[in-house]
Length: 75
Image (cartoon, rainbow, N blue to C red; front, side, top):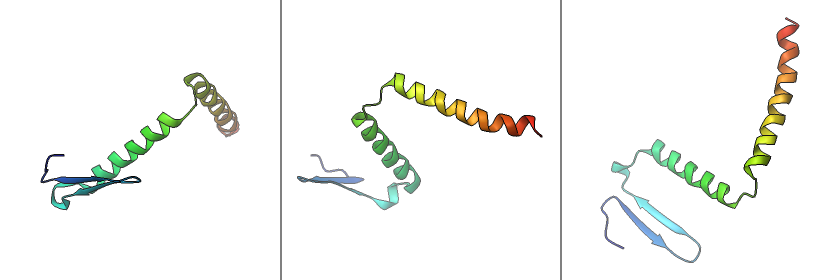
């Protein structure tokens, strides 16, 4: 792997180790990137279909609406 002045990657049997130059790395952007990678990994291993996800979203919407509706109209 080519030598890069901004980061260094090391891969072994169990880990990928990334060393970043602190001066060139924005901590918040790094956290966002790691969160994105985590979500991608979860998404790839998920067996949830788009159809089931849509059904769950509709159930959640209905449940929330039934709770909020009474508060709105009883005021």
